[in-house]
Length: 335
Ligand code: COA
Image (cartoon, rainbow, N blue to C red; front, side, top):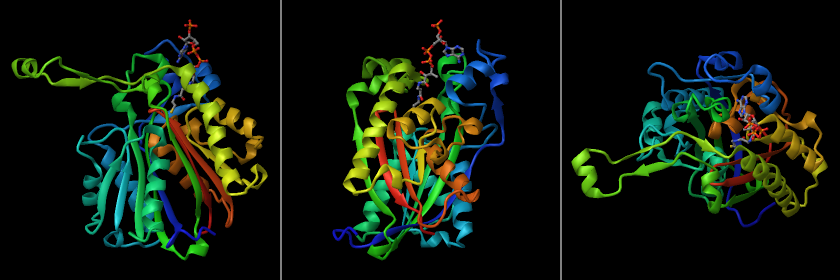
């Protein structure tokens, strides 16, 4: 029990949403030089969901949130804080306020967190701090991304990897003894920001922008796949081991390893380095690909819906990605 906290954190409910449109590996093979065999063997991905028509980030984020609230009959007016982890906002000033309006959480403070595929973990930690120090009682944490809008669909090195989705969790204050968020570790290595990014090209001068009406523009995703792979399989096990050591927990006590769903080979390599058997590794990667900030809460929601996770289970969740950023949260499941 951590005596420095004023309140514990309880995870009350989860929800998730993905767009209806599915893009299979075979379909991608019709417009870039790739194959289902290559994609599946290198990544574990079979298909991904992509928003279409007028459907937006806010639509899927709101649906995931509504589903989580519905499970516990929560009145949105009781939410104190909404944290939306996303790298694909509707509005560069932040999209959380649109989510707040859409779900009618009129009393909630709302803001975005941008930390790419680590975004949900950073948001969970931030939310937990606000609860544990006594500031807020009911917090909605949403991870949502629509990277399909930022993908170069003619680049086979990246377009096969990503998909769109949203996942939500509702955290609530509890007694300190029932605290579920046991520990965490967050890291950043900004020197490697260019290994995976969506770069903004600025015009060279303010005067040019007046004359040309051009202020710059964002590029599509660029990635050094090999470097990102090496980074993930080395840093993530370190982060997990650090958390477990600081909590005096052994790897054998971990019931579920829930990693950011980036690549099946990364999931296997991290589990193998930690000597965690593969039947403790949660994965829905084949169906959705890499959904960035959504991947962990989406997989968590599905694992709970499938009754994989039981009362008292210890879940280790780790995110990693652009920044470069990575982080771990150790959670005890008690509903
Ligand atoms: N289909 C067919 N061939 C492809 C391909 C595709 N979709 N993508 C790349 N290739 C080709 C490359 O062009 C290269 O060909 P060449 O040798 O003729 O140049 C060959 O496959 C090997 O490319 P390489 O990049 O070395 O493949 P890889 O085994 O490293 O796998 C990734 C590529 C992207 C799957 C892998 O590096 C990876 O998963 N990295 C981590 C990415 C990630 O998870 N990012 C998000 C983190 S949040």
